[in-house]
Length: 470
Image (cartoon, rainbow, N blue to C red; front, side):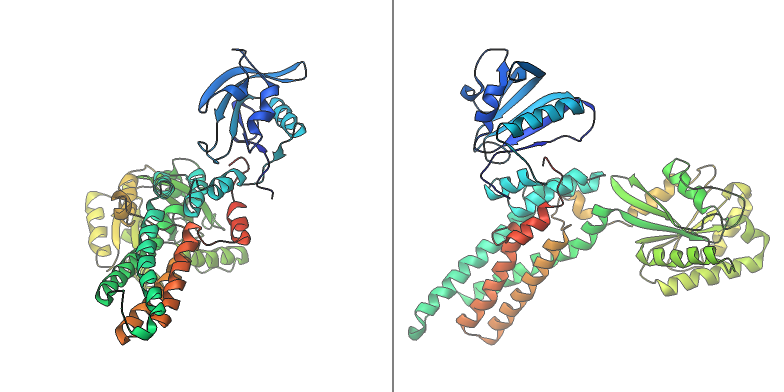
């Protein structure tokens, strides 16, 4: 795409609405719109200062298209760093297209996806990790993903990377300088101080790499699999959690034959609940496929909620032992997954029977037990609170940097690998010229994150995922 022309796009969602915003950016933004805008004040637009608002009409020859509010942002004090105009018009799709087509006829080009933010990056208004955070902010659906995107967009992550890169670059410069005086055998870079720096860089990189596991689930939602035998209330529990009739509830066993998924925000963190087909022996081919999918979803889940009909356990002691065996199989197959055992239909039991169930199921090690009634909703809020405990939100609450982007994660892994090589070189007294190679590689990986080292293919892949108008 050309990056020195003037582009136009709708910056708000397409369709009818009260207001729509059309964004224009580029060297001719103000000069193109000036003759098309008749201000109520009578003042030409090209004489107005930056960050000013003007009421008037957009006209095509003598035809008034709409009464609008025009915002003027002069370079470099704009989102893109270029001359920028934002037109707030009425939200009729007809008006939106009339104004956009008028701009195109007068010399603008339709913007590509993410082109405004790409120009902001190329003009030094933000680095690449901040630009990527813009897309994350737009797509954030809960408090946690919003907070992480805001922290990254404000430069928290890139500032940390920049500090490490600068300190490493300073030492690299001294080592490179030593190469110019190789025959005189002098050291400009203090090796003890360098070892301390390398150790600190390793610690920071490891912390950031470890945070990706948390960041990834917080960004995409924590998957929770609801499993158990048919007709124990899994779909009823899903409906109760979501507070809507999302899944079909029936007295007929095996009603859910495929997985049903929906999302819910608990304490600002997104959870993706998966209602699975009941686990049992069956000759029904379709139901068997559903059960197979159930085990696939368990393997993908972060937390497993195992539901059992508490009334059945009381009525049949043999069923209680059978249930313990089933839970043991799940735990043996997925030993690392948190397991919550839910004794459902609490409302059908007496206080004495509830106590008996708690004693019997408390023998199952490595799991959390709770009794509730999915039908009445009793105990559902307590379950939500327990699910939140399984999420490591400490780093988020402390406003620490959390890595959520797989591209950043891979670059950090590459940087750590090269830093580890530098440490090995220091330990064995490797010559400066050989260590300099690994240091340059580490600096390269740091630069990949912030965009100091990039290429057209990388930028194309990143900004292709943006919406048009941003």
